[in-house]
Image 1 (cartoon, rainbow, N blue to C red):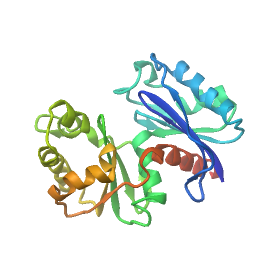
Image 2 (cartoon, rainbow, N blue to C red):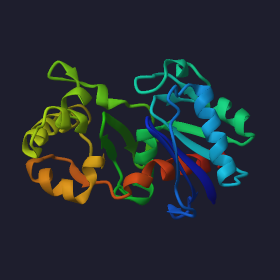
Image 3 (cartoon, helix red, strand yellow):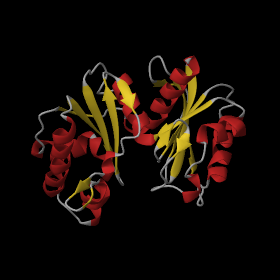
Image 4 (cartoon, rainbow, N blue to C red):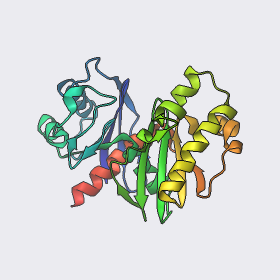
Length: 249
């Protein structure tokens, strides 16, 4: 089934048509800069623009950098405050005239990973941890998403974990890979202490092969440690997969 997947980020909004049976992109990715205000209305206009760009008529999946439960936005740490309590599924569906499914960006990237990427076929408790400007998380039990975990906000060394071990912190504090890995190791140990996962998949910018070679040797986990393979397309693919499942229900 082909679905239009849209990945809404803080600086850019990317989209492509996805074959949800294989995870392959059926079109070139198209990117539009995120509106400076990034209000619900401004972002809705970009979603409509994406639909017209692809001449799309059918279900749409969207990511959002916020906690989304049952189509309602509950946090706005990385987006405009007007999003809080917005019924985003309804907002986008009315704007486009299509059935739109919206989920958290880390949940979407994780869904792509367990469906088509490094986590494919993994059973038990699996975490997808995306590391970039912040730390995002997605939790899966026997392949099924448990939405809204937001584990980048766990407290570590007296602060939010993403203020201690994100890629942004590494850059701002000019940490070596070894020193950053020591911080990230503490975060992974906290996840293991709380949840005893069977596998942890690391995604985001730090999952690129050249970077993995710099720090993976410093990490040690009881859980199987895996690295994401879908990179920049994961959000688009995961959003499309979520919309495909929703369309069948």
